[in-house]
Amino acid sequence: MLAGEGVWEARNPAEQGAHSPASGRWLRRSRRRGRSGLARVAAGALVFVLGAGFIAAWTCWETRQVRLRSVEVPLPGLPRELDGLRILHLSDLHGRWVGRSHRRLFAALSGTRFDLVAVTGDLLDMHAGGMLPAIALIEGLVPRAPTYVVPGNHDRSRPEFRELMDALVALGAKVLINRGEELRVGPARIWVAGLDDATLGLDDLEAALRGRQARWCLLLSHCPAIFPQAAAMGVQLVLAGHTHGGQVRLPLVGAVWLPPGSGGFEGGLYCRDGHWLHVTVGLGTTLIPVRLLCRPELVLLVLRRQEPDR
Image 1 (cartoon, rainbow, N blue to C red):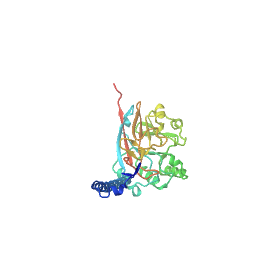
Image 2: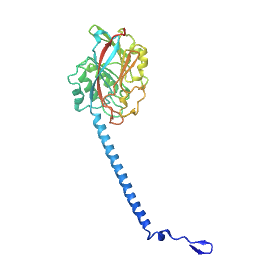
Image 3: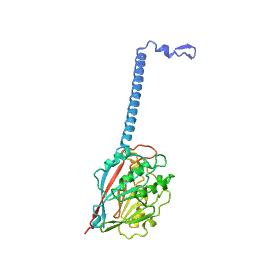
Image 4: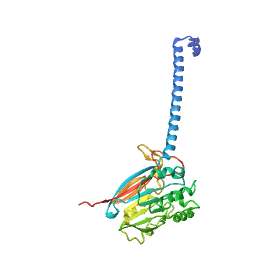
């Protein structure tokens, strides 16, 4: 209304709507929207907490669930005497027990026959743990088959590295550090070679293959990135660890992170021109003691002679 000549007097909005039915309905709707919004936030927070709790519980459970996988490797030109050779491949214990005194680990191997054991590094962990889990593991394997060990970057980072290697040799394991030796399987011969850790620049493939007389070669390396070079130098089968399979994997994504030295290889079998690489996701963990969609594993590799195409 006009309060005076040329002046507009605005009515107080609160007074204007104090007795308006429309205003009352608006206030009631606002209160209901506020309460429903709070309810949605609370429900979302509850779902998040429950989901996070489930994932945390699952990862802790999965970390302890060791499985034994059997994988056949087709190898062109494999001597007939080696057809069916069974290699137990394990890696990345990281100074931890797999059950009390490795009870879960040896239970997974119960009744399993293998002809050779390949341990591809990181028995120790640079952040925690000691030597006893590694010693107990090798002590339980050596009586069952020839056991070969190479070091990893975590092993090399611990002051007790030399002490551990000496202890494993005393138990009867073969520690291969940039060297190889011949293994006889019946009338057949295998050159079993092992590399020092590549992430520290200590590996020497030429030295590991020096003196090789057997045509067929098995190479143990902590880091899988050596595979292309090894294949080019005539190595038929490379065994590696190091990657943990990413340790935490996501659906449709795969490994969240891979360490330097992985060469882009996550886990499983890879082939290049008839040469093969097997990367195990390992037994232990590092940095964070959890696994997600990546169970710890022991792998039984069964070598199969692949007949040439005619």
